[in-house]
Amino acid sequence: MTPLLVALGAAVGAALRFVVASRYDDRWPWGTFAVNVVGSALLGALSAMALSGHAMALLGTGFCGGFTTYSAFAVQTHGLGPRRGAAYAVGTVAVSLAACAAGFWLYA
Figure 1: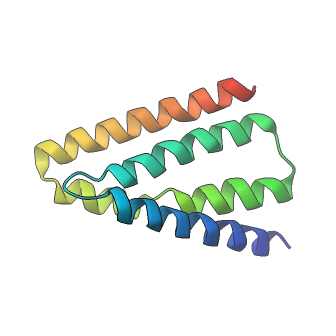
Figure 2: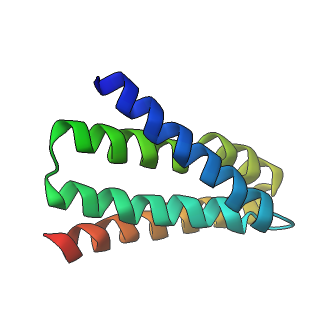
């Protein structure tokens, strides 16, 4: 049952990520930045809620895992070049970690 819940959550998360990134990624990858920050905040909140194994599989591992993206983040960071890419990488990681902590704090 758990693998099916992960797959269902990932299918919804990945589709939503595609829509957001397609709409907002242009010269600067705002869509990818947004999904990583929002997904991190949601995962922090879900972690604080101490959900059951099935709920966490669906929402945490599945949805948040499918919604956020490391691969697009890495490709876009490289594509921005050394200076802009480094700024984007540091900004994304810092804001995503802060969002995760805030999500956890709000629901702890």
